[in-house]
Structure formats: C-alpha cells, structure tokens
Image (tube, rainbow, N blue to C red; front, top):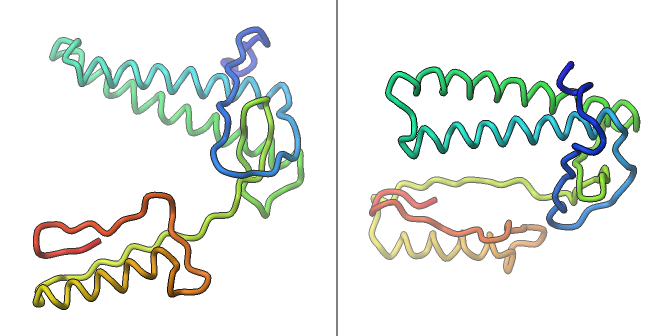
Length: 166
C-alpha cells in the first residue's frame, strides 16, 4: 500500500486505449490511478528481469534470485490489480458486469464476447473423414451455418501432425 500511496499525479502511467467496443461509465479515482501506475511499474520490472534472463545478461548465480524476484513482483502486481478493481467495482456498485480501464482514465464495460470452445478430435481416421470434420468445424466457427455462433478474430483450425486437430 505504501507504493500506491507514494505515487504522485505527475508520475501517473495512463492506460492504453482498450480494443474493441466498450461503454465508458466513469473515470478512475486517484487511488485507482495510483494502483494502475504501480501495476505498470511492476509489469515493466518483470519484463526487464525476464529479458535479462532470456538474453543471458545475468551470471548463472543471478538467475535464481531474478526468477524469485519475478515471482514476488508478479504476486504483488496481482494483489494491486485486485485492490484496484475491488475499488472500482465497490465505488460503482457494479458487481455483475466485467469492468476494464482505458485511455483517458475511463472505467469501461467491455463488449461481451462469446465463450471460446476448444474441441479436440483424434484423427486416427481416413483423411476424408478428417476433411469432413474440418469443414463442419470451420462452418460452425465462421457462423455461416450455425445461428448465434461466433468466432473470435483470427480463429483457426490447427493440425498437430496427423493425429490431432484443434
């Protein structure tokens, strides 16, 4: 909490513009802006440590402590995020809808997205059957033949060798 209280307005890190469509409902308060800024600082430090490990910039005896620091920082980041969103939900008395934040310190209700379903089929069948399954799944995902079905941007059917189709 001391890190959150220590953030000054001139040090705020503003959220990026949210993707997709959304409904802005309110502005973030001072505490929420501070918490978001701390989250972004923690994310940056985690990124720096991961890059140092991945890039081989640490001595072998420094890797373990760096990985431990990443775990601690990630845990702190999660707790700060929980507090920020608790504050937003509580202040707006909005517990039944997901909320997010966007550029301009806006609290938003993101568009509702359909659930993602993963279907895994063993393809130990003739290639013709695999093609039929692929065609049916493709039609369902593109919502061409299934009313109410939706496909997230960029959904695809992936094959792993000749055994599995995702």
